[in-house]
Image 1 (cartoon, rainbow, N blue to C red):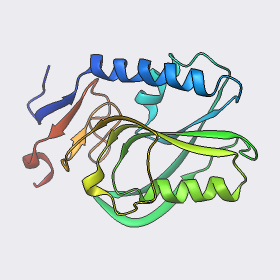
Image 2: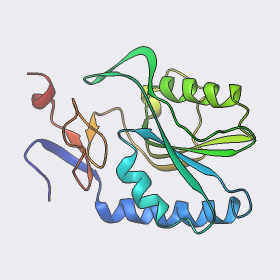
Image 3: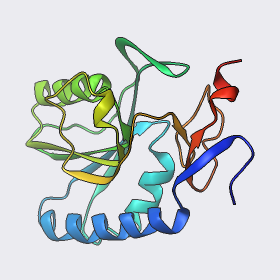
Image 4: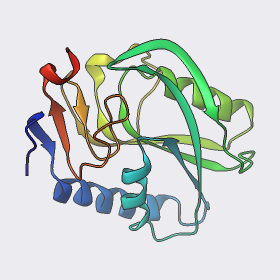
Length: 180
């Protein structure tokens, strides 16, 4: 059910679950003998990662990192690591779980950090891909749930000033909400 602050629904909860099942099967097959670490980028990845993990049927670990380049609806261009993960990544296969890949700035910095720490491989899993917002062309997700136009979306972990993360779908936020 669409709320009055949502312009249109981009992904229903059922569509999100289907994406997670598909990714889970692919990851299970590819990482069966690699014991990957699923690293959620806080805070937005939490609902997506929670749904995705249910469908991965191989040994894995999870951890989280919090890095941000956003304030309101715009990227600031500067990336800050606010919370680091505790699991060592040296010689490990990392699956970075992200709610949306927009500019690519945050992911580039996190990937550089993991490369410096000696990760065996690093791949990106994203629920949403927004290539029109990309400023870093070297960030290419391996697993993409849905490619979307350059609109401001919320729900299923995505927020506007920390609100709307709890929606069980993803929708376009009406401009009237953030252009007050």
